[in-house]
Amino acid sequence: MLILLPVHDSPLNQIITTAIIAICFSYAAFALRKLQVERIMHLALLKLCFVIHALIMLLQFSLLVSDYQDIIDTDLTHILAVILISHIIITTLTAMIWPLMMFLESEQVLNDLANRDPLTGLLNRRSFITISNSYLEQANHNLTELCALMIDIDFFKKVNDQYGHETGDEALKWVAKKIKSQLREHDLVARIGGEEFAVILPSTTQTQGESLSERIRLAIHNDRFFYQNQALKLTISVGIITHKSGTNNVNELLAEADKGLYKAKSNGRNQVVTMAF
Image (cartoon, rainbow, N blue to C red; front, side, top):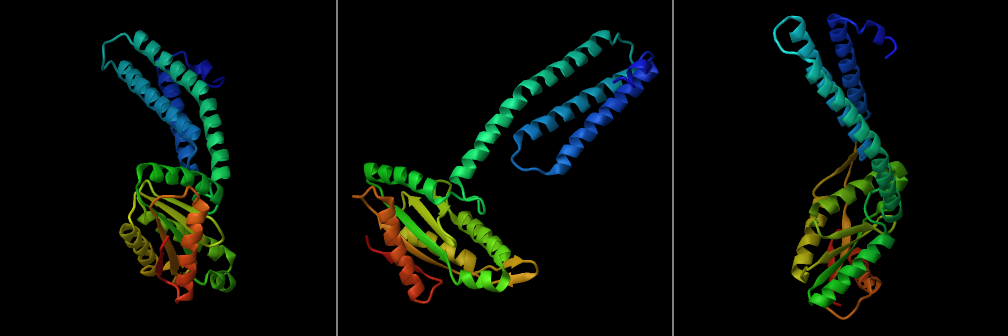
C-alpha cells in the first residue's frame, strides 16, 4: 500500500495499481488452491474472498481502461465508490465469519478424534456401540428386522509380517473403502479392532443381509490391493446375525455375529456364515 499510494494520482497509474492488486489477489487464491488441504472450510472461505476481490479489481481495471481510452462516456465516481464499498463489505464479513468457521471446524476435528478411527475414518467401537443401541431400540419399537455383521481380514498378520505395517495400514484403509462402497447410506460401519470391522444394517431381512454380505466379500475377493508396485490378494470372513426383537444389547448381537465369523474362519475363510439368534 505504501509503495502504490504515491503513484495513485493519475489515471494511468490507477490502472497499473488496480492491475497489480488484481494479480496479488489472484495469486493468493492460486497459492491457497495449491495447498490442497481437505476439509478446511475457513481456508476455502478465504480463497473465495480472494477470488471475489480479484474479480472486482479486474472489473475496476476494465472500467478504468475503458475510461482512459474514452471507450465509455460515463462518470465512474459512483461506480468506483460501489466497488470500494464491496471490498469493505466482503472483507468485514470474512473477518467476522472466519473465526466462527475455525471454531466449528476445530469442534468437528475434536469430535472426529473422539468418535472415529484415525486410520480408516470409520466409526470407532465406542461411537459404533452408542449409535447401534439407538438403531436397535428403533428396530424393537417398529418391530423391524436388523442385521449385524462381523468382518475380519483373513491372514492379515501375514500381510504385516511379510510386507510391513505401513502396507498393512494401507490394506486396512482399502478394505474399509471396499466395505463402505457396498453399504447403503443409512447403514453403520466401524473398525472395532485391529483388522476387524462391524456393520449394522437397519430394516434388513436375513436374506437381504446375506446378499449384501456376499457383495462385500466378492468386492474384496474379485479385486486386488495395490501398494508400492505390489499386488496383494485379500479376502474376508463374515459372520451375520439377524435380530428380530427382544434385546436392546448390541454387544450380545455382535457376540452372536462373532460366532458366525469364527465358524467362517474354521470352515476355511473367505465366506459368509449366518447364525440363528
